[in-house]
Length: 142
Length: 107
Image (cartoon, rainbow over all chains, first blue to last red; front, side, top):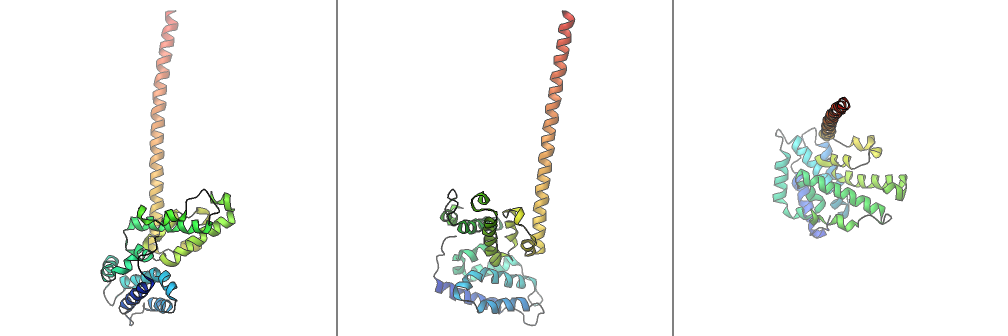
């Protein structure tokens, strides 16, 4: 994906706000709170760069928890994503995180693209007939 | 083929690394099971499938069923075309036989 159009400081600040926003919604009296709380603690101990990397997985764990159990009321994943998109629009500039909020077909394409980028980076120019990674990183093509 | 350039073991490592980098971030995402279609079947072991949820496995299964149905339909259509072609050939052969026997009778 393209390098995101948002500074590391801003990502860090927004991530902090998002995590505390989601963290507040964990029902600590629920028997199912252990997994999201543990994920939150692990995330909070990470370095800023690692937080950026692990934000999608933390968000998905918390989202699933909220969708499964939120006190008595289960929430719809689409509703949760809509709310997060409205409340944290700047985080939608973080490509790896924004992927979660795309339509299903676009998620499929972007995941496939990221998979190929990973392979191309792993190959590291050893297969010269392959396209440059930069071509696949250009999300404007799709 | 990547295996030809890097050798099978190194190619496997490259695929594994790329898959794991994505699994760390997106294994909880419903569409993550899409990657099953991209990972070479030889590398699809239990550890990769184990990260999928019930719904993702269901989707993989349904995709496979859909693909199987599509293949069955294609096979059926090809069989149908073959049957039609064979029918036409038999018709032509019988016409030819009639013409030849008429010609022989006349001579």
